[in-house]
Amino acid sequence: MRELIELTGMVLKSTSVGEYDKRLVLLTRERGKITAFARGAKRPGSRLMGPSRPFAFGTFRLYEGREAYNLQDAEISRYFEELASDVEAACYGQYFLEFGDYYSRENLDGSAMLLLIYQSLRALLKPGLPDRLVRRVFELKAMVTGGEYTEKPPAAVSESAAYAWEYVVWSPVEKLYTFTLTEPVMEEFSRCVEMNLRRYVDREFQSLRILEAMGGNSAAGIEML
Image (cartoon, rainbow, N blue to C red; front, side):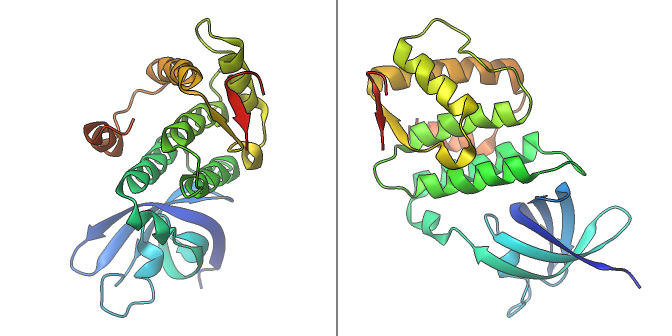
């Protein structure tokens, strides 16, 4: 009999398969990115309906198959349903999921990226913290987590922007979203993150195109929250 395993993770992607099933991409702490099928998740009243939604975070119980897992049950601790009330924040959140899907790999420790996505989604819901800043901090830290060399900004910047860059690179994820930037420093910081994205990321993201269509875009200049 196959062994039932428990993995802590989040649903990055959910697509329909046939009339009643769903194919999920999960980012898990223990096994990195995995593919799982949720049989009957689209049937009314299915216990797998909620756990098959993007952003669902919790403990997933699965059977391991040859090429994919089969989801049997889940205990979801956070759905991030608050994002549904803010279209722009929801798009940013979806972008984080897409980015995590791009950078994550199967059978590799996914704990760092999972924690980054989780904390970044929480930051989107934090009053007074601009979504634009959350996006750029997430992107820079995701590249660091992915092993890209980003120790210093790729262009000459002000002392404030350089400090913000180093803070994001070296701080633990739990401490990332504790500052804001003045608009001039934000522009510098964003420009440098964008330069690194063009250098290291060869993927276009659907959610980012939607955001751009929407127009979503303690040194001096840095205010710690």
